[in-house]
Image (cartoon, rainbow, N blue to C red; front, side):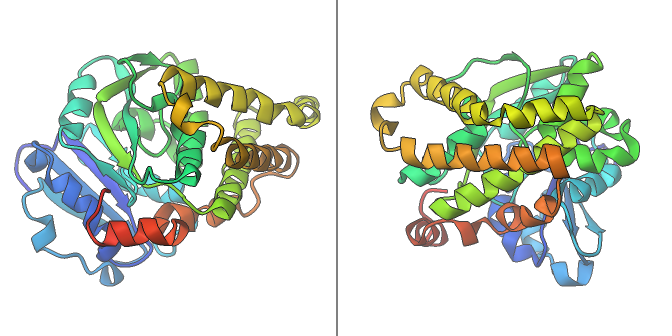
Length: 329
């Protein structure tokens, strides 16, 4: 650790050893401002983490946060944010690989009056319609080509924040980081600005097993709906209105995603192959919203963890072989 403070604190999560993080740490080592990046490694225990000193050389510093068993990603990310040293913090998933220049672009954009700055998203495993479906369901609004500028929302679990803004939420921060759309809406309501910076890019490894797409969309939107209703203190009349209107959710979201596909010139290659898996994911997400509004999040935060922290278990055999053999990431 040097006397000069870091410019960016990167939070990494693992339920096991450092090996899960080795690939993404390699991408962080390739950043031009590596010596101004602090790594915050969050794991159940420091003994189980077994970090590799050689892989961690050259960073501004490395902190380890031992949380005990990780029950929800948002709570673990919040624990990392509380010990971070930089004014800017960002959670980087073990399956999201920042491109060269990513860190510099985020830091530069944060010189403006923005509470949050989000990157552009690229598909790390683009060879199947299942992967593209998963990618577009989660990140369609931030796929290149896209222009920099103020934004209403930014990609969840990919976005950087000013640390002091996050810490102002106190004990509520963990729940808000579990479903970042809720956090970002609240930031806007408080008068903060969000900024989309496509010069910062990250290559995201997406689920490419069809059944897993439906499962993750269900849990994502159950958690989202539960947090949205709870944090917004929705009365039961409003919850009921959304439940009754739930058959419209796939239509509204589907039209938005198809518009994004068209606007980015992907329609000729994506359609009609994407339509069946997209419909499945949209219906599963709507079902999750109904349960979230009516019964709360249930076990969805825990259920999402394997998708979040062990993505290789949810990609096709071809994608797994390619990644492990050093193919496109």
